[in-house]
Image: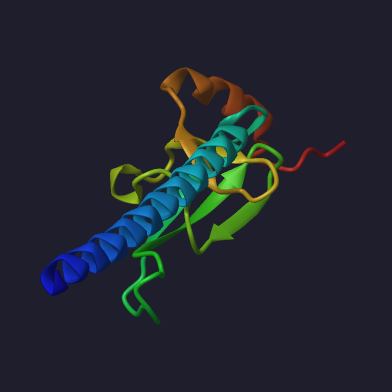
Length: 132
């Protein structure tokens, strides 16, 4: 009888632990869904079309959360912006003068744009200041 009561106590403990794990899984799944929704909102247009001017490898990182790379981009609105955290694209695959879509508010790189965007960006850039 004593062993049976010990086993029943262990079963109750295991059931409680199982319920806690199920609840934690539910919370994590909810967090994943929310994060996916946020990612989709960030990926929605309007993008700001930008060129990558320079990719900088960060030699000294303060902690593990710091990015290995940072970027300098030039937007189609003629702003030059330094991005300590480049965004959602693997920076090692990027090259200078590549065309990317960035978030219009945070300037995080969201997507690498195909080459056909090149003519649009070049048409918007002014290389020399006009006399008039």
